[in-house]
Image 1 (cartoon, one colour):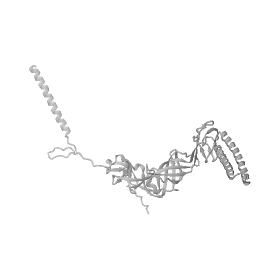
Image 2: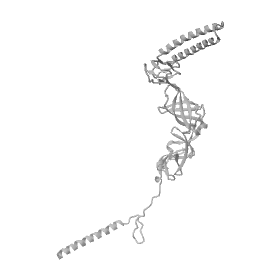
Image 3: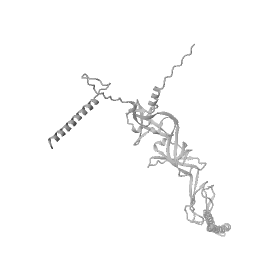
Amino acid sequence: MTKSNKLILSAIVGAAVLAAAAGGYRYGAVRHRPSATDTPTPGGVASPPATSVPAQSSAAALPVEVTKAGTVMLPQTITAVGSLRSDESVTLRPEVAGRITAILFQEGQRVTKGATLVQLDAAINLADVQQVRANLALAKSKYERAIDLAGRNFISSQARDEAKNNFEVAQAALALAEAKLAKTELTAPFSGIIGLRVVSVGDYVKEGADLVNLEAIDPIKVDFRVPETFMRDVQVGQAVVVALDALPGKTYDGRIIALNPLVDAGGRALVIRAQVRNQDAALRPGMFARVTLITRAEKESLVLPEEALVPQGTEQFVFRVVEGKAVRAAVKTGQRRDSKVEILSGVDKGDMVVIAGQIRLRDGVSVRVAGADTKANAAKSAPEQPAPSKPKS
């Protein structure tokens, strides 16, 4: 590189260094330019503005919705689930074997007690009856003749007794044959609704074969269980209210008719049977039922909305609002009715309880009631109403 080139390069580098130095000085001057609010220091240089730390405001508190714990009149009840059962139920089965010759009912129809439902072939049984009747007539004639001869001492007392025995055996044989003949007709043991048959005309059935079921469903029974701890509160004759998921919006009143003396060892529960009227036949055996057992008269009870409860494991908690802070409280619950739950302990009447916003709450955190600030601000911003002027006298 020549000497002239070196001089040119040195000049360019020097100019760049001077330009950079001038820019840094200008940037620093702008950055530290005093403002009207800066406080001048004794040296005459304004100090930078102090950074202020905002105080914690009510906006930092978690918003929640609350309700006041109040009391209502509630009957003392026990709730349980159960199943409906027929008041009477039977499956018709023949006691003698035979071929079905007639079915005298329509499936699903109502039948009265004593009505003939199924007939079996009775030809053989009828012939047996006729034969036994003939034997009975002969035995009766021999017995009467033996009495006459014994009265005249023509035969011994033993011969007379044998004739009497033969006559009585013939009578018993006739009763047996007639009973077997009657078994060929199956009649309704009680009034009810006939079910669906599983046989047809011409089927040969053996003794004990299932033919059709018969159900009496008015009134209808409901069986349910309650824990053994309620044993002293349950008595025969107490009222029950039955509701069914299959029939929403409808309830049926009934009474307890029996208590099982045996407590179920598996679930430690008492089995109770109640009876409910079913005039419209809307209730059917086997349906799932929700039972409310009324044990005592109404009393004043503390209640909260169900959404106030915070379940944790087997326990229930609520958050009370005390002096702007959330206080977690364990509660013991009772019966539930109309989206309300009875509170037996843990909350007092008049307490403010959180019903929305519990997910973010912890014991002791600051809370604010949603809508309270808006109402306060609206009250402050409302224009003052001038006082009414007095009329001049």
